[in-house]
Every structure is written in structure tokens, then in C-alpha cells.
Length: 81
Image (cartoon, rainbow, N blue to C red; front, side, top):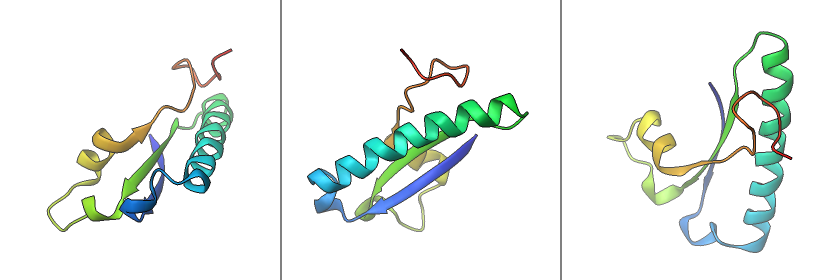
């Protein structure tokens, strides 16, 4: 799996512009997944991470489990209708 990560100021996570960028990034990851899987690659996922959740003792795996956003795919790289 490939990740598009976006560490963001914790207080800005709910801001309209951050949410709009997140929506665009999730759609992009869905399209990237579709293309990638057609060419033998890996699916993409978008992760919006509040900055105050990142510390030395956090793993990427844990952060992804907590903050990954749905890419809108059906699990086969295709966008849901």
C-alpha cells in the first residue's frame, strides 16, 4: 500500500480548506489506486494526521490505523458509484 500523508496543525483539521483538500486528495488516491492496480502497482490511501499526534514513539502503522481516510474505492481500485 502507498500512502499520501498530510501532517496538519491539529486545530486546522476541521477547517473548510483542509477538508476540501482532503476530499480532493481522497479522490486522487482513488484514481491513483485504479491506475496503479491496472499496472501491477499498489493501492493508495490518504492519511490526514493532526500534528500533535506525531511523536518519536508513534509508528506509521499506528498513525495510519488511527487517521486513514476512505479512498472511495470498492477494494478493487475502482471508485464506488
